[in-house]
Amino acid sequence: MKVEPTPRDKGLTLTITVTAYDNGMIQVNGVPINEAPHYDPGHGWLGAAEIVVATLNEFRHQARDRTNRQKGA
Image (tube, rainbow, N blue to C red; front, side):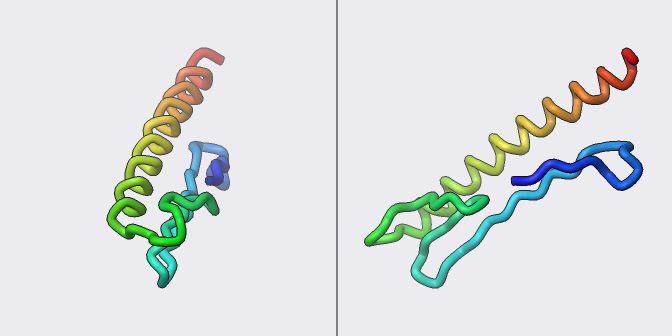
């Protein structure tokens, strides 16, 4: 996961990397979601979705806090 300011520092950009391997393993930001040796792709995709939603929710809070700090400054 990567959070960076926009080019003119007018906001934030969140980058999340999801990787789906041919053997069924799913990774989010380099962290395996489902376990070997019998990767369950369904479990991997559901786990990845939960992580992405939780990350997006935290990013929303960070963006809101940044906006509030900008207004208060």
